[in-house]
Length: 268
Image 1 (cartoon, rainbow, N blue to C red):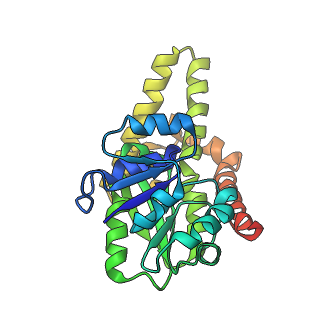
Image 2: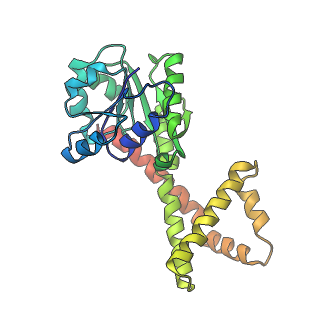
Image 3: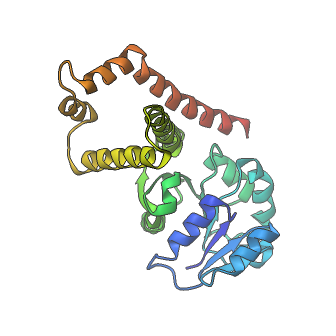
């Protein structure tokens, strides 16, 4: 099996690197295409990839075509490769807002998977939600799951609605966490901690809280109750967040990302 990754940006290269660990792929069975001279030079330095500049040299050779380009490039790119593809080839797209029907129409391929990754894939801690067109077989789904899992975990969802929804939760979610972390670091600095100590305080706090959450069945509310005691410091902080409607503001932010993902799909 050969995989072609089109687009050697952050996420494209992350998945290409991750898939080198897959037992399904032999060495140098991962092709990466990019049109940037700088990127191509970088790719030629990576021994386990075959770097390409021209679609005609690699598209016909691929079993799976992994699309990791900006959504506004989708139509032109897919129409360009449509004369080169074969019916058995499969497309995996991580382009936000580009629907399966659009990909099918522009590429002339029926086997399409739409996926939504997130940034922690760069360190093997990502979450990729994905949905497939009906033409993708059960065996092919297992192959896709195995490839996506090389960057963390994957989640098969029932419809494209949940790809847009996961954009608002897991896809954009790391930015919400970083936003919260930035605010806590700024508070620590204002309290007199050094920049390095602020980073350690906040980073280890998040790491510890996440490990507690992942290793137990307790809900976040239950954990909050364990930390907060009546009249105590944590309760003062949580009361302040409630008074300022932080809970609703966070949900509004997630829905803003979700709604924008839906809008992007309609703009195609």
